[in-house]
Image 1 (cartoon, rainbow, N blue to C red):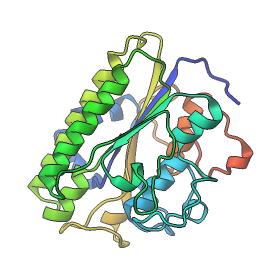
Image 2 (image 1 turned 180 degrees about the vertical axis):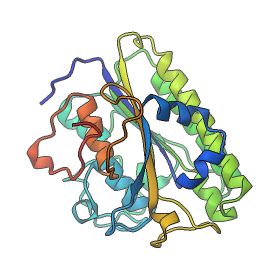
Image 3 (image 1 turned 90 degrees about the vertical axis):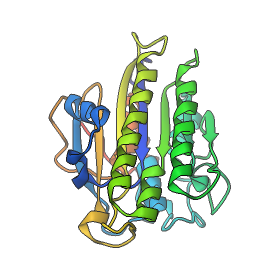
Length: 284
């Protein structure tokens, strides 16, 4: 059931592999601004979920856990996304909303490795890396951000979008969590700033009421890498601001599945009981 005025909008920005404990040391003014306007709080990856991108991002965008969506690794074979679709697909197919998803990790957007995760948003954008290097992934994230800026700048109705930035995670895998990793996080924050500017500059911005959600999927060991059960790997985070999210009042407990649940709530949509979402919105 759709109960909101048609001014509600949501942008979710996924930044892969950002350690929460390092954020206070870094220059991230745009993320800090979202935290001040709403909250930034830790998320512990659910005990039964591998600390890998595939299962974590699938839980984030579907609102259900691994036992339902069936993605247990970075291959998506055997998934149940036909039953538990991502929010951009469900909003477009079931709710008549206009959505987009854009990023550069192939199984999220292409029929590769058992994907795609994002099956049928209204608009889909994919940017292929020229090489599997940190430098090439920074280029990908720049082009992904530019594509999202383009989509946000179109003079057309838009309700929800998802932007995936992967360079931070790739840098950690190659170089560990040193200075290059920290610089990559700061670069991701600058791209977040570009996206926020595009939201503010939309022609309908005066009427649109935007909820902004920024989320990471997992952390990293100091030497780079994840998939284990250490606190550094299992600690993720969510930052959000927008209507109904008072400043400084983070939920008492957060789960990755809450992200999709809050997307629906922010748009005024009461989830059908048959969706069997595991998450709950950030606010009652």
